[in-house]
Length: 161
Image (tube, rainbow, N blue to C red; front, top):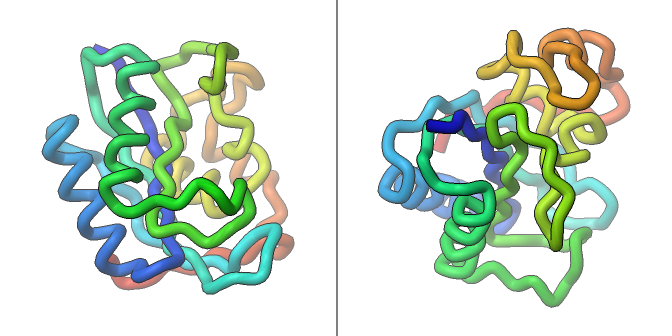
């Protein structure tokens, strides 16, 4: 079994899409470890604020199978990929970590670089996997968060949808 962490985000009908995504993830993968839900402004474009959280689970699926399942869940939630990375979305599911594997192949990059770049990914990941070490840097996610400038990208907890 591999321990997997996935970021979950939405800025279109956030409450409904996040709740539905959690249900779909539980159906596909079983019990989830879940961070709090955080709100943040859209990053890199003008858009409505996002809800973001991170979930963890154990799976026997390969990294590619997990990524394919995440894409299918996004598609079932009406994900429009035509707007590029910096656009509003009904649902964004990103495979952040698959155990300690480092993968760089055809659209699958692990660990996700966004872990080190965005507070809305790092903060919830550090909340549920703070002692776990980044497979490349070797630093625990709680330590990485402690050295992150939270004022540059403010995130705040919200009542979970």
